[in-house]
Structures are given as structure tokens and as C-alpha cells.
Length: 503
Ligand SMILES: Nc1ncnc2c1ncn2[C@@H]1O[C@H](COP(=O)(O)OP(=O)(O)OP(=O)(O)O)[C@@H](O)[C@H]1O
Ligand SMILES: [Mg+2]
Image (tube, rainbow, N blue to C red; front, side, top):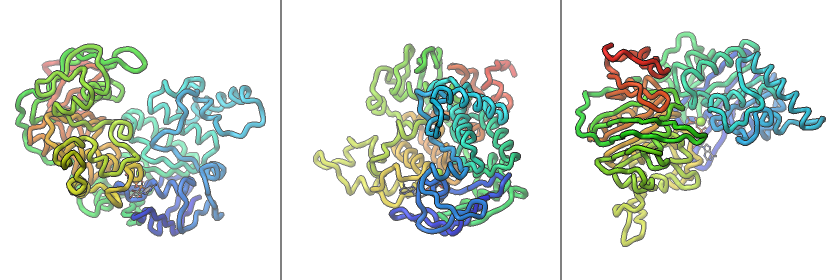
């Protein structure tokens, strides 16, 4: 149904698409795989009319097509589910779906018809949502269902899914895959992007690998393995589990007692939580998202005021401090909401790296910025963490999703913090970068930082942590040893099932 031929797209200093050929048959899931910055999103944005290709041709059902904007794409039955949702929070599901539709009748009568069709689509594809519910009340998984319904409502036959699973819980991923398989069986063409190789293997019919904007290979899913895909992507073998030695835990560096944190929508999201993290250990926090992990992280970072309890970092009580003050006690923080709490899009890469220590005497010279020292430091981090950017003066928003994450990680791991709180540290980064980040976390641990790592990725939790705390409904359900615990055990605790202490 789709043929993209010889697509080339240049950005200042980057060849993002380099003579790419890509096609999709009806009834297939064609996956685009590649390292951060390889050009996956760019190619899809060209197809959806968000970017214009410098060269190349797009054909749909054999007809040459000129897609100048998303409206053209939608008219031709192309839908795109973005990683950052484009819904309007105060509006209901039905209003969001109706938004932008040409209407011949009154808006109100139309909304009823829209709601009816939403329910119908929901039943056909297992996309259950309440048409009258406002978006702001919904979990991300539900919002994504609305995005898919919105595309299907517009009769999309070719669906682009750019990292749709990055923000979903494993249960939500399973549900999404049921829907996607059904769409495939109904003859839709799907383009899927994900850094999680087990997802790619579970869903795809075909996999095309991009490197530096070029197609380096295309294989059917039969016969592909995680190892072979990793090799194709990175051009070398990648260790899928990090090497690590036994932790040598020291004193308690992060001490939390009786912590209560309220949710935005009311009620306590963290309830009487006690937790100790020792210097020189990685405490992994597993749990289905929404069980208070993000509130916990934000409370530690001073971004959210607890309603009760205490948090000590290296012996200093930090409750009541501003985020900046908390940092001075020795906290480094990798936030889950990257663009909101972790980076400033309009600032350059170099400025973003400097954000946390712009008062540091190393970068000041008689009260003025020492740009030479700043550049040197940024250059070193960008190289070490392979942050792909044309220059240090490129605005952060022009970086690919995974490279923004790598930039934040590089900055936060660059000092010698007493405590590091890292939420979803490898979300959206490619496997080569994930391997490096894991190695660095372990190295930081061996330099005696106490690390609290919040992750929904059980492979990561089991592979990197020295102890695993499972959170459920704002409390720690239990702490297990990842060397002896099983995934089933942790899975049950994540679902709130108490474990026998003696087991
Ligand atoms: N609007 C833009 N302006 C300048 N450069 C851009 C722009 N959009 C993308 N790029 C650059 O193009 C290259 C490809 O980026 P793209 O977002 O397509 O990567 P990706 O494969 O989707 O990576 P990721 O896995 O991190 O999402 C990167 O080097 C990126 O910095
Ligand atoms: Mg991308």
C-alpha cells in the first residue's frame, strides 16, 4: 500500500534520511528499528506531512502522493500516534475525536453520533473508553486508546506508531498489541517503532533497520532474535544484561520515614512509606506506574511537598527545601517527565548540561561564565554518552527523543552525588545506550552513591538492582533479592498480593 522511494532529508549539520526506501503491505506490521537519532521519527514525520523531504517520492496504492501537512495525510487514510499525545485535556473523548472534523450538522447532534461510533470502534478493537470522560482524568494508556480511536474514526488504513509503548505499563502493552494485531488482520498497514526488542519480535512481520539515516537491512521476523537485531542496529554485539559485582553497601544515605504525598486529583498517592537506600547500592523500585513512584521521586527532589513524613539525604532533612536546596545536599535527579523537569528545549545542549551547576566555581571566572571550561565539559559528556547532536549550540528540542534522555543522564551522572534518583533511566534510549547507562549506574554505585532506580522494565530492575522494592498503592509491598526472587513473585507483589515472609 505504501512505497517511499529515495527519501532524503537534511537538517543543519545532519543527514537525517539518506536515500531511504521503505514500504508497507496491507495486513503487516513493519517495524523501524535503529539507534537514537537514526532517523526513524524523521521518516515518519515526512510521511505524515510534518516535515517535507528534500528528495524522494511517496506512493500510496501505486499513486504518487504529495503530502504537505497532516490534513493531507489523514485525507489519504494515514494516521499517526505520537509519543507525546496531541489531545486537549479539558475536552471529553468525544470532543477530542470530533475536533477538526468537517461537520454539516450541528455540533451537539454530531457529538452523539461521534460517541456512538467511539463505542462501536471500542467494541470492535477492544479500545474501551468512556466518550464523555474528560481527557485530563485519564491514565496515559487510556489517552493512547483515544488517539488510536481518533485515527480509526478518520478511517486510517495506514497507522504510524512512534514508540507507542514507551509510556505504557506491561499490561497496557499487552492490550495495545491485541488491538494492533486485530487491525493488522483487518488489512491495515502498521508502522511500529520501539527500542524494546521483545516487543518488536512479538508484533512485527518485517523489520527494517536504520543507521545514520540509511537503511542497513530489512528482515522478516522469522529467524530474527534479540541478539541478531541488536547486532544489526549497533553494528556490534550488545550485552543485554550488564556485568556487575556484589554491592558493598555502606551507611544509609537516603532515609525516608512515614512519607505521605497527595495526588493532584486528591487522596494520598504515597502512604506511610519507609525506605532506606545505602551508599553503594542500587535499590530498584518496581511497580505498575501510578502506584506512587513518581510522587515519591518528586517528593525527594523537592518538586512536590509531602503532607507528612521525613526525607533525609546524607543526614540532612530535605522536606520543605526548594529543589535547588535539595540538590546542594547531594541529590542528582533523572526525572520521568524529561521535557518538563529535565531539560529546557530552547536552551542549547551545552546550556542544558550546565543547568545544574551554573554556580560551580569551575565554570565561573570572576563572576562571569568561563565558556571555554563549559564547552570542554559539555564536549566530554556528549562524547562519553554518545549524545548525537550536530553542535553543542544546537537547541535541545532539535535532538531526537533518546538523545535528550542521554543528555540528561550524562549531566546527572557527571558529579559525585550522595544520592541519585533515576526514574525510567533508559526509557526511549536504544539498546547500545541502555547498556552504557546501566554500566554507568553500576560504576556510580561503586563510587558509593546511593541509587534509587524507579523502573517499569523488569529486565532492567532485575539486571541492575542490588535490592528490589515493590510499590503498590503508595506503599512498599516488600523488598526482595533480585538474585533469588522470580518475576512471578515480583509480578504478584506488583498486583498487590502479599508474599509469605518465610517464602
Ligand atoms: N527539527 C529538527 N531540527 C534539526 N534537527 C533535527 C530535527 N528533527 C530531527 N533532527 C535530527 O535528525 C536526526 C534524526 O532524528 P530522529 O528524531 O528522526 O531520530 P530517531 O531515530 O527517531 O531517534 P530516537 O530513537 O531517539 O527517537 C537527529 O540527529 C536529530 O537531531
Ligand atoms: Mg524518534
